[in-house]
Image (cartoon, rainbow, N blue to C red):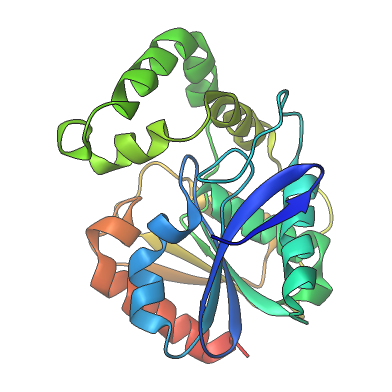
Length: 247
């Protein structure tokens, strides 16, 4: 299990496959290798996949008082790229990670060949306020789910429950306060926004002002979880995107 250190934190990542380098960023409450397992397994003969566990997620350490923002998370990705000796890479992110992938392309465009944001999550303020209002019962539910098998809780809840609670509530705040204001992603960086046809959660269309040149792809009959519910179809779509842009 390889780790690297940044800001005094030990951050975990996976590195496997052969070909053009691709950074995979997981969603809220996820973890790198587990969330992208089907993608890495299906395409590692054509691409080199690096899957990062974000701060407080998976096997990566957490700050006692999380107060970081998008800039710090992009800095973690950049530190990993430098450690691995990669000049530029394609960045693929899901949900929360989709927003981070877009921020990466905006803040460090010289490091990004192209970006694919899968169901990037734009959290409605009402949902964020409800999450804070129900913080104690949500925390209680997640603590209970940690000790139960995924067959009882469902895989999504089980996976989220493994993430540190401080991190979960902090990243909700990050999604709530995120805005597209500021400089757009340069047109020199191709952007693909991939959404599920039936996704009523992510509101991904709200990311378009930061990437007016973005190419939209719709996954038929998919909701917010195509990585799980339409695995084969999703891997096929992503393979097509990487074939067009990754190098």
